[in-house]
Length: 137
Image 1: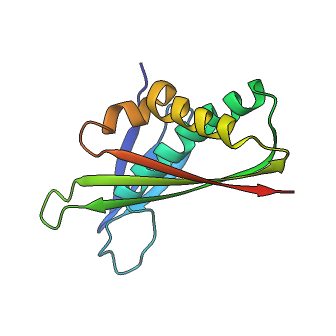
Image 2: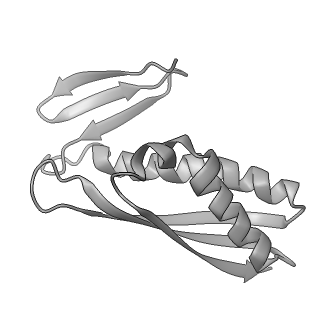
């Protein structure tokens, strides 16, 4: 079981501590000081981190020569509270030598639809679409 804690600091600012004792500062979008991450952005970041870990592992098993990976994740939120995400798109940019588009596409599909626990948790509320770009280096 994973356990985290969130502690109110002041105004609209919070500190979250994960199960590994790593901290993250969070604040509301309308926090005048903009001192931390917007919690809903952290959900998108978590999706990218989770899928990225799986994606790199799969690409390495496929013997793809990956030297860089970036994911740009955008989410559309409802206009009214609770502002739930209703659609998420993940653009994956893979840098490497001699990359196979078919292998990268398969790896992305496996990472997002089979292995990433964050994607599995949110995909029924917000469909996740993907696209990718290969950068030959």
